[in-house]
Length: 441
Image (cartoon, rainbow, N blue to C red; front, side, top):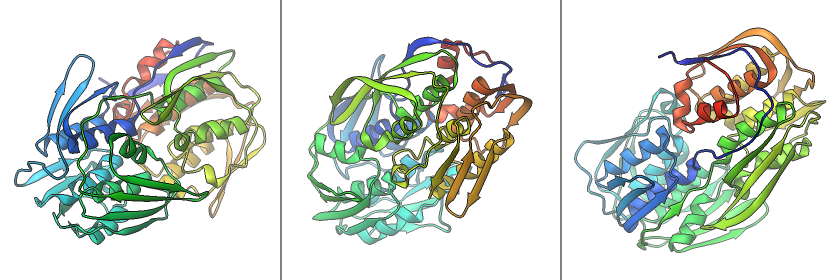
């Protein structure tokens, strides 16, 4: 079977409703925290992507029993630092940066040496940002470079730390929070604003945690060595996955879409705030609260008069996984859009910022990058009629999906490689597109 899709025609108008895959961040966190809980936890709507499957395999390597039924997963947790780890255990995180960094926090209290590896793309990513604080706890890390592979040897006598998280990385913050569960005492964290799923879950499952929020920083205090009970979770849809269908609808003619039951946690809805500033026709309905997370249905309509944006840097961390699709919308907007301080995009599965700039230039869009500022000169009349081949993007699932949305809305004759990459986060992506009427081979 070929590992590319061919698209020759834009999608026709549609009026429909869809459900997207479960939230990846919540799915991975449920797997890890359920393994550390006491008793049997259940998850409904767990994302069955490669990243989550890697997470399930990882905790099974730690002696955790997992059961899959028709409509849910079950994990039998053993409590904090009670894993049964065999000699020469290797955990393969695949392409998942979230798993690779968070599992190090989970393993901080284990006195068995574990090797953590990943695929070629993940192995090149920076792990020093979590290795440094783990060493302060008293964890031993053996590595020859900044990335993977590495070996971790935890301790049952960790000391709590004070940690300053400057990047705005939820992965770094969460790794430290998980490591803190293995310590006697209180770990204090001062963190730049980022996703707060771990904090919310800690509160809901009974982990002793205190949180104080200021405009720029969150101050978090975690008390360790306190077991917590198992918990069930119905996982809502992923807004990052939704973003591609939001863009598809905005850029298609006479179309409307309702995306059901999506996690609209404020730390994740930067894309909504950004495209609203661009005059997109979008709103939330049926708002609810579940397990501390906010959910809603998203209603989006075609928006042919998108405006350029001077994007506030304060929104960056809240939309970090959606900027590829935001850049595509900026390319079809009227005026010049400005984005700043987005070098963190190059620390993702691929150098996304570089890829996005080259992609837009390939489409005939003028893009200027000057130090930390990116200027995108939008063209509301952009229509393509050439042939385009997209390949060699390190199997980055978001690059594949962004390219597919461009092909379905801008015209042209496209061949987009590495369709298997969507298994990382959104295996049903192409299936949902076909439901909406997209045609591809």
